[in-house]
Length: 203
Ligand SMILES: [Zn+2]
Image (tube, rainbow, N blue to C red):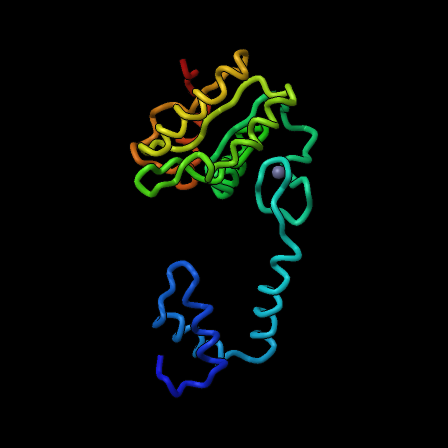
């Protein structure tokens, strides 16, 4: 950015450039576009960002984003309480829920093991999972982590971690009709419904 650019503009561009998919150039373009917006619109955007932290937090049950704790899915008394579906991220949970064919509980793992990126089990929400299982309500855990190599490794890790502590817990995973490399959040509804219906128990 030009050294003579006004300081407030520089500061904004620096902040915007930290967003995913943004670099310094696109951040500058975005900042210039914002300057052309009507003042009410820029104020609305600003207060929207400001309110984000106050209005949203993580659900203490599933780890999803929510305005109220527990979230609407966890608070829904009509859902089965003996089946828990473990997903990588929040958007996978939404995709599965919007399908309308799964009526159990959810939990978000928060990532996958990625040895090459030095991402180990400390990056995963395993404690929340163990706490939830220790409550004793869940009889089946469905791993819906996707069909990537990282997902496979993570599924094996979860199974090893839980099998001793919860010997009676049934652990299954989505059927392997899923295209290799598929992420749950990008799967179409019918594929997802079938892979859940024909889920396989992990030996
Ligand atoms: Zn929740």
